[in-house]
Length: 225
Image (cartoon, rainbow, N blue to C red; front, side, top):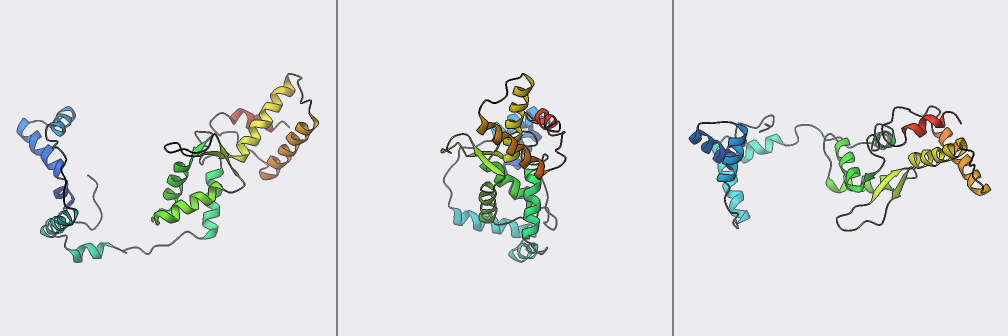
């Protein structure tokens, strides 16, 4: 069980399930992992309704018995000044998330919950949940992010990718067709491909070739254009 700096050794007292398992293991005279799993099953009680207000009072009383009174609890808060990320820092983090070692390092798409997790992790000092969700929603609407797949449904969140990956994929398809001699017949499509090449070149003069995933080979081929 993890401990918190400044908190007395009281957390174990609040883990009643752990105490029950340890007591059963002591009775059995073993500490193996399989025995611990069996003890957890044997000591699991049927869940019952509890009065939350009364439960909180019990928690406070038990905490006070282990040197964790309301005064000590209050002293644990605000020990480090909270610094919210400035606009410049948010832009820098957004660039990292869009980069080859960001959201698409291992997969070519990312979900809305992935965005929330990524931005929550970026706030190393923590941040209000609504602020994290707001930043994630705004990030999903920037020009460099494209939504893919169908409309989000209950239990099926929206998925996104980066516009660079889409551009590289289109260019890769064109390169493969050019290699086989099947150039695009449509002049409009041809001009679109060339414009994508120009945009991608403007965004980065040295496209990374170490990105893992579907598009790494296409990124390498793009250097030849």
